Image 1 (cartoon, helix red, strand yellow):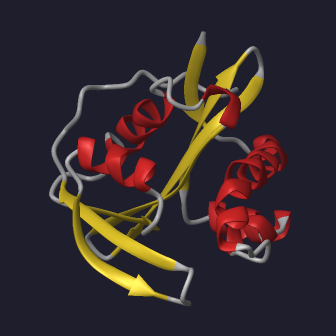
Image 2 (cartoon, one colour):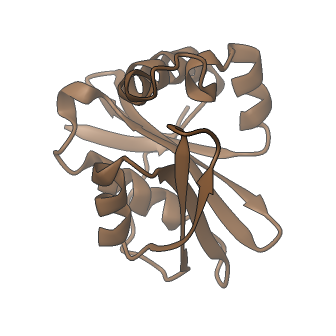
Length: 163
């Protein structure tokens, strides 16, 4: 059984390790292991978490997924949805997205971005009613699709309380 809860400080090393595992596919496609998710340090993650909410998915005491969000003006920016590659395509990404969305203040816009070539992610976000609003070209290979939707209250995902 997989449970969701808010991340705590002691989760950060596991989140960072899973982030590197999950983003390795992206790094391989881009032929660039220097993308930010691959090089983020524990100290950088700690700073990020001071202004972000992070939800983790746990299975048998091990973190198998996470997602983060932060508020910028009246926009809820969702970032770094990660799922252990060994359990992808089982609905966990969708569960994590719904859980983080329910923490969004009413009336806010939800925004995120993903790699333009990452059709699996784009499909997931479109399934969750995100619409493509712009594209960003960083390099010939690194291109992003920016997506957003108006906040609606999704079905409640029960989060376990961390001790």
